[in-house]
Length: 434
Image 1 (tube, rainbow, N blue to C red):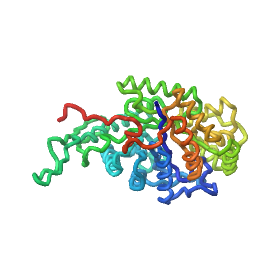
Image 2 (image 1 turned 45 degrees about the horizontal axis):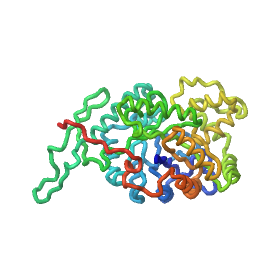
Image 3 (image 1 turned 45 degrees about the vertical axis):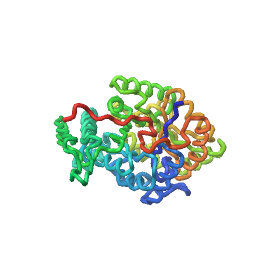
């Protein structure tokens, strides 16, 4: 029986935009104990993986809960030592990194975690990030994705620098590794020139799992060619079904098995033992939203300064063709369709970072997830608890058992590696080898 996959989108305070103000929320700062507790709680719930997002910039918005971030690979290396099964996925941008460094870091995490690493491939879009890397602006959208395609090809090639049995460590003969089983990449491309080899044996998974988040045309092409997990923002089932069918068809067109490209929309659940309890929890969070924080967050997401705008008036005219993120396009289109005020836009859409919100009992949440899963709107979900740790505890203790009772989710891990959890094959080595 097909079972859904569950990822945890890690945010120490929670994903609701005002979560950090909740009296029971973890501090949105630097307590490694908080991160360890959340990772272990997700592992108790048999989640496939946890996911850490990343950006290289900071705004002057003092109301943001996600302002401060650990470097993801450093954080996940620490969490690898505190967990045994759950997958560890981090974002690394192709805009401000080099393929060799990325290949080495994720291969290292895969070795340190005994095969649980995953790389979320993104191209950066914020001008604020460009300022931190000696640039005044980003490369044009299509150019960024052309570079990303070559970047991923180089990383995958470096991950194949060694045959699986190249490192024999034979003390008697004095042979540490077999040089005939080491392979130079010798890549010469439009953006990169990389000789290789990688200074690590082949990773336990062969390749760390490739993840991609982005729903633009270029993003979907990148995902279809390479990604094994696709994170996406989908708020309505028909659009989710259309995205799902489109991705699967594109994957097949690249000669890949569609079941090896798993689509996981993000959802922000607020779970109660009753519907009213869940609604009360949600309203408590909504009451914590400061209008200035709502306007600042919306300005940042839409790339338009909304300072001084009447929050109870309509959203100003915004040219969606100039928006670089599918999340922003979706917000503007929904606001126009439903005649939302500015306040309604940030209260309904921005609070969950544009993702679908689910508010109700464990049965309600399980029903909704099951509907999307069985209707081919998703292969699983990237869970974004509104408040941490309480929101995750509610999901693990109330929703997960209901999904298990229905046969929709595992009761125990069947393997030790992330590819085992996700049902993904171990990549074979290319042939012939030089």
